[in-house]
Length: 334
Image 1 (cartoon, rainbow, N blue to C red):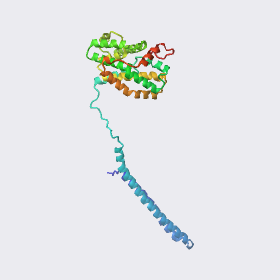
Image 2: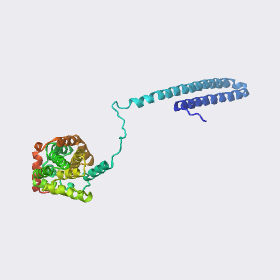
Image 3: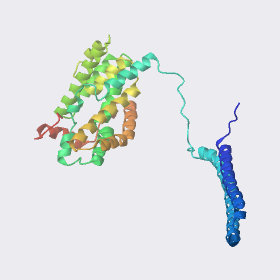
Image 4: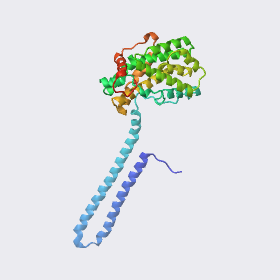
C-alpha cells in the first residue's frame, strides 16, 4: 500500500532531492575536469590550477545553496502547518452562529399558505398597482421629491405616520374579525376603512385594487365561505381590507400577511418614484433596504393598535393626492 504524506513532508522531500541533484551535478563536473586536467601541457599548469580552484569554490558555493534550500523549505513548511489552522480559527467572527437545518420542513398547509401569500402580494399579481402613485407624482412635480434621499424620507413618513400605518390597522382588525367569526366587527371596520380615505383619487386607487384582489383571488383559489364574508362587508372593499379578509379566510397568519402587505405597498411606491424622479435600479433597491426597519416597526405597531389609534400627520401627502386630481400632465391615476 503506497504511503500518503501531507504537503509539508512532500515539500521537504522535494526540496531535499533538488538540493542533492545540484550537489551531485557539480561534483560530477569537478571529477570530469580533474580527469582532463592531467592531459594538459606544462605551459597550461597555471591555467589548470586556476580552473581547479574555481571549480572547488563553485562546488562549495552550490553545496551551501543546497543546504539553504533545505533549511528555508523546512521553515516555510513548518510555518504553514502551524499558522494555517490558527488563521482558520481566528478569522471567524466572535458572534458567529452556524446555520442549522430546521427541525422539520413546512407542512402541506404551511407551504400552501406561504405560496398563496407570496403570489397575492407579488408585484406580478394583477391588481393594477403600477397605475397609481398615491400622490407621489404631484410631489415630484412640486419638487418635494427630487432624489433617492427625499423619496426615502417621503415614504418613511407615509408608512409610519400616514396611510401606511392606517391601512395596517384596518388589515389587522379585519383579519381578527374574520378569524373569530365576528361579522358585525368585519362590517364596521370595512365601512370605516372606506370612509377614511382622504381624497377622491386615493379612494379610486384603493377600492379598485381591493376589488381586483378579491376577484382574482376567489377565482383562482376557490373558498366556500369567501362569498359570505364579502357580502357581510356591505360597502366598497378597500385594498387592505381585501388582503386581511382573504388571508384570514385561507387561514394565513396575521404577522406574515402584515409584513408582506407592507412590502408590496412600499415596493409599488418606490416603483412609481423610480419612474418619476427618475431613479436607477440600484438606488431603488437602496431605498427599499433603508425602509426595512420602518416597515417592520410599522407592522408591529399596526398589529398592536386599536381603532382609536387611527390617525396620521402626513398633511403634505394628503394634499398631494388632492392636487393630483387637477395636475396638468399625469402618468398615473393617483
